[in-house]
Length: 324
Ligand SMILES: [Zn+2]
Ligand SMILES: [Zn+2]
Image 1 (cartoon, protein in one colour):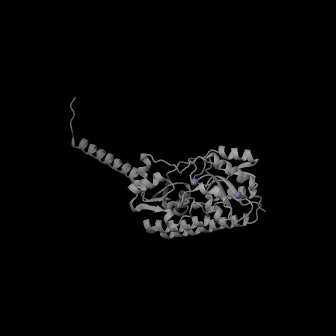
Image 2 (cartoon, helix red, strand yellow; image 1 turned 60 degrees about the vertical axis):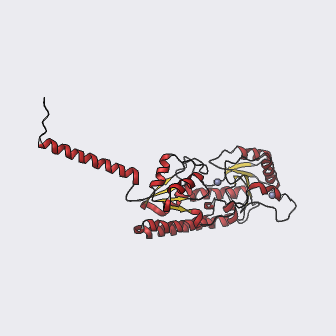
Image 3 (tube, protein in one colour; image 1 turned 90 degrees about the horizontal axis):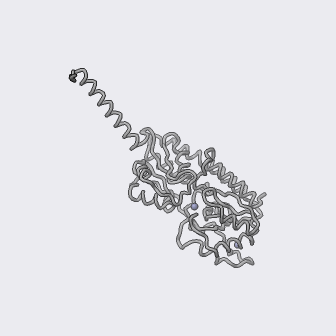
């Protein structure tokens, strides 16, 4: 049997080839640029994802680089995620918080990066910390001196709702520059979010106004902004990063602090091991409870968001500090 190329067969083959090429081009576009109708936004970790989704709405498509349930400080990027950074139209990150993300942006971010730390100046790492400058009977302030190195900045800025609102306003401006057609929507959604965050701020101020204790013993030193905003004093078991191992001296000092201030609760986090907090709690006869630094949502928490987790934090604090 011989194969005869009639004009009709040729035409069909050509059409099929064109169709194939078309399909190939289409799918290549999809992997490279994402949804052409939406702004592709990459966020370094959960609170930045929250901001981008609330302000961007359906005009953006947001990818969070940190996996749900994973602690984001020590995030390592796989090649696919580096590709997402290269392809993104806007990358929201917090310089100094996730070294791997900082590095990828330095190499590939160009002018598509939005640095949260650049729009809302960070506090020194010592802010909101506990010291004994009030000159009362217990004079052991030097023990806190080794907690942080000089000049270090505290990245946990999202735990002050009013600062998060300011970051949201700036993000709306930036999104409006990337996507001018939707600039008004972004500004409007940022204003709505600001209202909600200010309501949350009022609830914290009111809820923590009158408490029997104001010292909070927490697992890593993530609550400086919260402490500063609501006049609490943070005693961190470890430093600014949850991976730091507390020294035996540090453990002893924190245990002593917890005792001295009559702490009834030692706080731990959802995304790191509660072991050290439990040890101290057992030592001083306190309970443990989750105070969530919101670096990521824990898995199985799909119904939660920044606002709901912060409200749970407020109730936890009110109980632990005996607030009226
Ligand atoms: Zn942290
Ligand atoms: Zn003390």
